[in-house]
Image 1 (cartoon, rainbow, N blue to C red):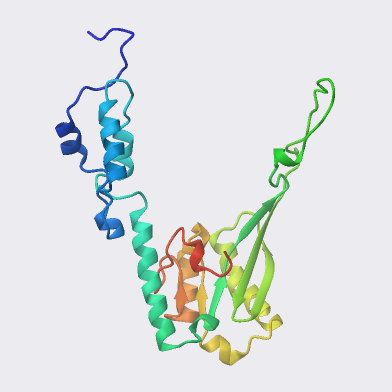
Image 2: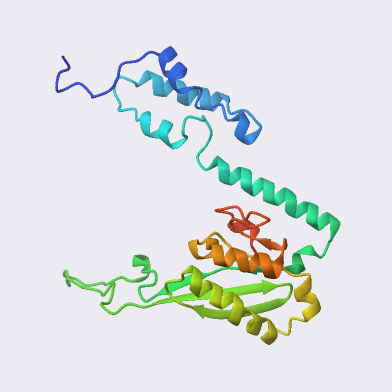
Length: 240
């Protein structure tokens, strides 16, 4: 029976620890290089030496990596690499390919904004018991859509704060052509133009994808499109 003064940890040997959960420092499949450095070995040894005096949370980590002994979000890394390779091939075939892609994005701005406490100080000899308003009862949200095509800035345009598939389809069918006209994008440019969008739920609507298939054919990039846009890839879009 464990005494109350003893830590609530599981007793295990080094062999069972490594055998059950694998070598946590072997990430060759992810990076292509080993992590079995002297520093990693020192950390590993120190962790095992303290196994009776610390709480080792093993199960949550194993659950995050989903048993593959890979780093989290490995699928995003693979998709980003695949898209980057495809993009490089397009640039090799056409050095001006980037100028033919309409990159789009959306950003939301609320009334609350971002409050930085480091920029707001109250100085007094005695405690002034200062109160500050952090939020208001009446709230609003502005959803802004911008686009970049070569050296043309398309928009910006204010979308509905709660964007749905039907609302986004109306934007693509009725508003986007007017924005392209306002930016003086010629018909010849539109014929060879690629359209890129992110992976928002409204973008994945069946009606939206059918519309893009009908108007752009194979020349659109996005979730569920002919060319898949990788998630969590802000470095691949000029708008980010």
